[in-house]
Image: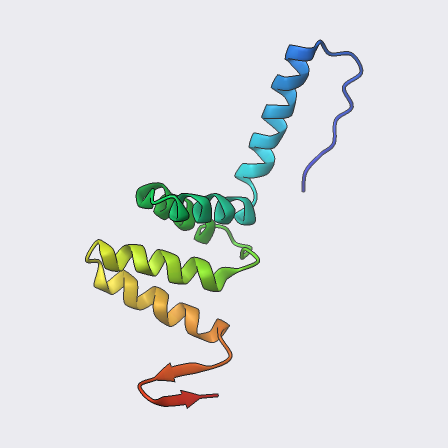
Length: 109
């Protein structure tokens, strides 16, 4: 739970500092914020940072809003790195989040 503080008089530079500090605290406690940053890093090709952000997202006890895409993107990073065991685990974790699984030419519902 986040606490709200009232700041009555601040100069502009102090106000920016406080805003940055609040955003840092909120960001650090949000799995969705880490997931979004991971998506941004993934799409810009920064796979090491994307991996760090996605792993940070998974470290929270609460899930992010869109866990399926996080599992799949992190799995693809692990596969590119040759980490087949981690790839397989994340692929299996992503399956219950999908309605349909496609194995070969069969669709399991």
